[in-house]
Amino acid sequence: MFAGAVVGKKGRRSLKSEAEGDAQKPPLLTGRLVWNHSTHVPGLIKILERLIKLDGVGTITPAVISHGRSNSPQLRLKVSVPILGGFKLIALKGKTTQDVFVITHLTKPELETAIQNVI
Image 1 (cartoon, helix red, strand yellow):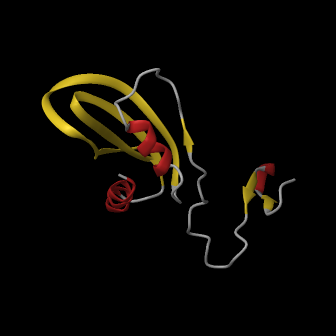
Image 2 (spheres, rainbow, N blue to C red; image 1 turned 90 degrees about the vertical axis):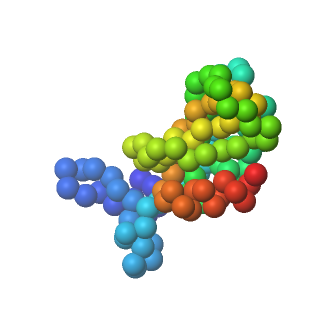
């Protein structure tokens, strides 16, 4: 059995917090970048690799690429809508946009601040 693991009702394992008062804190996430496309918005991967190193950021999945009407000369990451367990981001560069899904414990303002710090 794992260190800190406790068998509860019905034999299910759960992690027990080592310090009292941490019962309401979510467990720390380890960052992981999913590579499911061969193409990405230019410069996006470098930023996402820095973002996954932050505490509270779990899995980051770049998704569908599309072309829009707006033109953004610099790469921008915008927090769009909440999803189950995190947020959807939109990466914009030129007329290309890409959806990015982030699993995180951070709130929307905390995630926006984290993104500004890594860009």
